[in-house]
Image (tube, rainbow, N blue to C red; front, side):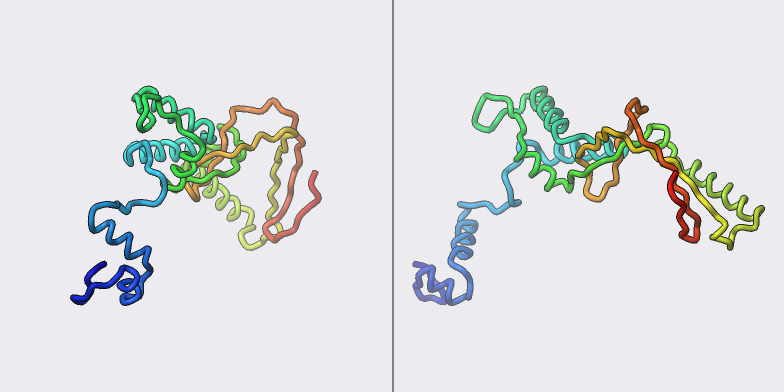
Length: 210
């Protein structure tokens, strides 16, 4: 029995009086007595917040450099770390080994997601991340438009690009920050490719691919 307004009432009567569920009332009473702690939802993490933050930042940096890790690699990194730092499974003398459940919760806590990545040559990815190269390209393009009087003539501005499609694509699912765009860096390709040449102009007209 509990007192409400000086009267002894049952828990169900108190819950009804204050328009709340019995379970909610019971939980709040447990917390007030120190018998229960309400924290973040989900299983308690073996690693500290600082350790998880460092790992998440490392994964983000790897993705930015074109080497986003796959799930298996992350589990391997964490397992090696746990072994070197002697992090034991709670209540045992066994070295903790992360599993898929832990990884899924870790990704949710640190805003990481899985995504398919596309391969890109190392020389190209270094070029597209260099602002000086990008700005220099558009400066030269603007000069060409002025010299050829093509600035307001989109039908006369054509662009073509050669693209290769590997016969055995190796796109893999990697882990990176939510919203982070990542590509997988490759030094070269010894695989068989089908090459096509796409041509279009600034007015939207397309030519048949070669």
